Image 1: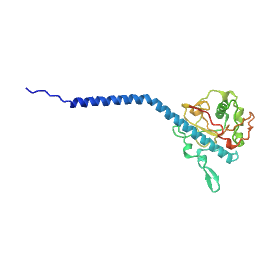
Image 2 (image 1 turned 180 degrees about the vertical axis):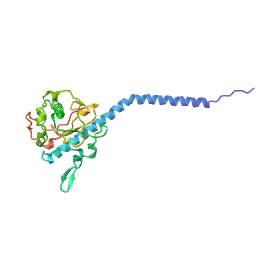
Image 3 (image 1 turned 60 degrees about the vertical axis):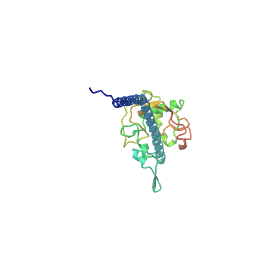
Image 4 (image 1 turned 90 degrees about the vertical axis):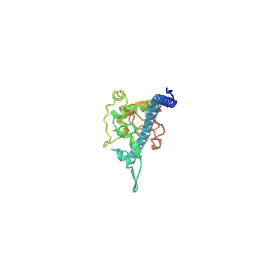
Amino acid sequence: MKMMTTTTGGTDRGATLIAVMGVMVIFAIALLAVAPSIQYEVQREKELEAIRRGEEVANAIRQYVTFYNGQKLPESMDDLLEGLPQGTKKRQILRASAAVDPLSADGKWRLVKPDPQTVAKFAKRVQDYNNGVLPANPTRLLDRYTVIIVNSIDTESALGEDDDSFEVVTDNQPFIGVASQSRSNSIISYYGIDRHSNWIFTPLFRGNSSFGAGGSGTGPGSGANFNRRPPRIIQ
């Protein structure tokens, strides 16, 4: 009669497999727990980068308008990327990376033309942030683009609820600012605005003194004041 023998090898392997599976389950649960936090941080960094790049574009527009003595606006991102004449060379005013919107699917900024329907709502946000006073332009060369906008701030159309019925234009349009094509709500609040498409990056209304209702700045409007009062970012 043969005696039945048992070995611990199979049992040990089974126990090891169960232990590994248990660790994997715990690891998966941990990943699920931190996933929302990781997604939040990734989105937050994208929004901060969008703001940094948008501000660069706004500064490039200011330089462009100043160079052409207020008589000309850029009509495409290429106008800014090509730079401005400086002797026999070109002076760079915009980095290639800043010409890409990290929030838009195709990476293209939406060009914002200087009209009341587009800019007045944003100007009202800036005014509210600045304690009810609309800052002057950093240079008087920009004043000609704000007369109608300023006079439209208190109209019903300017103060109405923000909407997403904008037309997406990314080329061949004179523009005074840029905005994202993304219609998503944001994590970060920019000038109290929590929707990507309503963040307008423009050189308008960046001075330290008030901008009169008649459309003329009351301060010196030096270009050096462009970033003296940073935009409000709430995280």
